[in-house]
Image 1 (cartoon, one colour):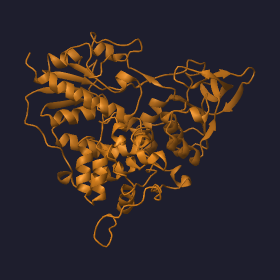
Image 2 (tube, one colour):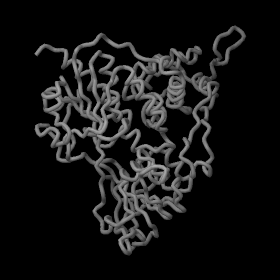
Image 3 (cartoon, helix red, strand yellow):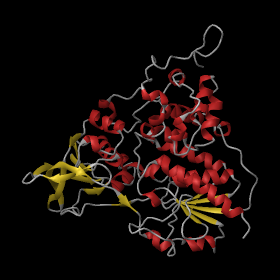
Image 4 (cartoon, helix red, strand yellow):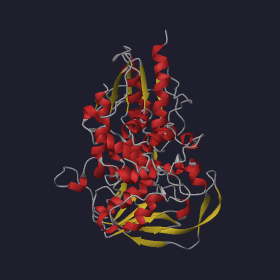
Length: 478
């Protein structure tokens, strides 16, 4: 319960005087050797204290900053009143995965960036409050968790390709609309990037499984080990299998390499393979698990995004003595979340900024080092960031036995086999409009397979948008 005054009314902090409530974390020395979660989350007292900082603005701009438009003002108001159950209901009416989003969404660039309090003070810790409520809901037995009301069965069937954030969000919304939903997942576990791409210390797999369990309770069917494009085509789903519509949320998981000499040496990984082996296939438990992974002594990770941070921090936890992050711009230009950069530095990752790899060196087929060149920043590129330019005669060597390439992903070409009539961009992504409508009638798409690699919450927003469009499509008379 929140603190109250002598009359029993909630005590409101003066926002200008109340600092943002910190969240306890494991010490860096402890967490660099453990896959246990880094942050402990708020206690009830901390969560209610932080909720009290909210100004309850008449015009809550924080909602505009959220891709799925969670009613942030209302769920925090419920917390201020001491009604955490009501707060969960408000939150889950717009977001089916609050415990996930509270951990991995870049709130500092979205809802919290739009918080009025943040104009002169620290914004309300909306993400941490979301995590608190999500965890509170998951702590209940399944039959006591908050669940949305379901519309009467419509008799319509929808297939979802991929069980990542966009597919899960779309499936949950369609189930609420009363449709029969089946998710087809190519891997042996549902969750997509939530389970294969994000490490345990940032997003525990049991938590993802518990969130998916609720979707199954809503009637969503999940079929694993089915590759759309091999097992079925999109046409076969709609004709032979009898689905009325299809949503494609297969992500963009095809790894990208730099095309430099030596990338075929033993000890060179794409970040996708490395993280999938460790996260989904639990290679960090080898030989208790069946999947091995090379445990490098000196590891170079190439890239500056969240995937690079995850790879570097995972390599440390596997026992690497030294981990180098090689990035061609400065820390200020890194696309990774500031929190992840800070954690990586705390844990001992050595940042080698303004460096670009030229060659992976090796001996007898195995990596022995990385040749890189110094860079300097020139004029801004199309993204607004200054373009890195090579410094003449500045090549140097980084001694390492493992290189992890975390320089991006692209669409899997198998998709073109799944739907030959689907319009694609020259990079292989699906062309879809603002309603997630594709060039094929009854086929919708959203998330990374449309936009390229983006955030979990943006993918979820696309899934919910597609669900509304699909609902309209399957209900209309044809």
